[in-house]
Amino acid sequence: MELVIVAIFIIGYLAIAFEHPLKINKTASALLTGVICWTLFMVADSPDTLLQNSHYQHFVDDLKRTVADFSSLSLTDIHRGYVGKQLGEHLDEIAQILFFLMGAMTIVELVDAHHGFKFITDRIRTKSPKKLLWIVCGVTFVLSAILDNLTTTIVMVSLIRKLIPNKEMRLFFAGMIVVSANAGGAWSPIGDVTTTMLWIGGQITAFNIVKTLLLPSIVCAIIPLIYLTFKMKGDLGVAETKSKTEEEGSGGGTIMLIVGVCALISVPIFKTVTHLPPYLGMMLGLGVLWVVSELINPEMDESVKQRYTAAHALTRIDMPSVLFFLGILLAVGSLEAMGTLHNFAEYLSHTLGDDRVIITLIGILSSIVDNVPLVAASMGMYDMTTYPPDSMIWEYLAYCAGTGGSMLIIGSAAGVAAMGMEKIDFIWYLKRITLLALMGYFAGAIVYLLTWPFFAVH
Image 1 (cartoon, rainbow, N blue to C red):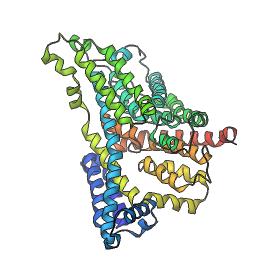
Image 2 (image 1 turned 60 degrees about the vertical axis):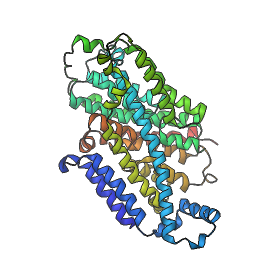
Image 3 (image 1 turned 120 degrees about the vertical axis):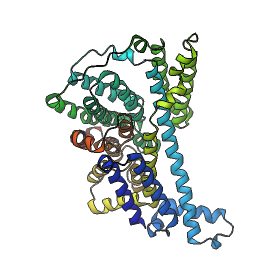
Image 4 (image 1 turned 180 degrees about the vertical axis):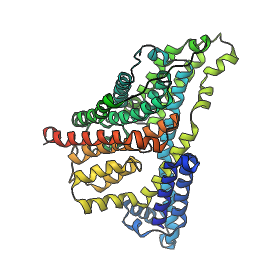
């Protein structure tokens, strides 16, 4: 049955990739794939591979300690109990990501409704696509290290909507934002979820990861930009003329922008201080911004003010992309729960032997499946007694898993967010952005491997 589930995952993945030729929405394909994978896992007999799964062994050991009449439980009962527990744990992790995503989207939409981004767009006067691309990608790179790559992508994609009327050019910018956001998040302990996992797990330390990955990450982001400086063609397009009322907005745009940015920046601070999940910090920021939006322009007519409320902003967020994210993470979670990803990582280890080659392949693989379970499997596969904190394998894993997802649009949270917001087609991204992301990925990897001996912790 494990092979059947893997086959279902591959079929679902292909359905997402060929969304337009099949004329089936990618969200429907993702949801069906996720639910079918877990359903088959639940009703099937317990696969033999679970016997080598450490999570399964811990579950059985807990049952032996807590269930008085353990011998009366059948293998089917144990299997279904394990699947239910795993599904609950994965749903908990997925829900945190989805609430984080919805909170960030609502904050951006609320600032946008008040024309808060006009403060920034009015100060970017260049009409050159090449100059604007360098500015946008540079800001994205820095912001993703301070916030995180997901939030930064949402903010920057919303920003380019104001700057680039040309749809095709805007899609291209959105793709490069994904590349820059993932590169910027890789070297920061709070910039990418996989780097954060390694930081919290003790595999890396904050100062050392910044020191060793900053240069490779810069190279990863800058190589595609240098190439595009010579190859990029097209124009930004002409913006539609807006009415005076639309241009002025609610009158509180600057205030909403400041509060909104502070709300986003406060999320990693909130997590560091309280040790609570990031989505709670995002909800706190949304709550504060919601209150501010209610207090702005109290004299405005209620029928007009409705357009500037958080309730209206919630109706504008892209829920299909949120559900798409749910389906993808559910499908990948089933492979992790079965131990398929862990077994694949061990297979690579025994077959290839060279850790550098394995980690490089894991980075490429993270563009196909979610990098979180891949990193989790790697953390379980490599013993910290053999590979102590700040070893090359952990630093290189942070870089590869963080930047490798840029190769495909569904390979990272940033890519999924951009895909939902700008309706980026999988094949379009594959043709126009994948090669650029691949160039940056390998260039940064080479830089890391060359510079690592100088930064190695002895």
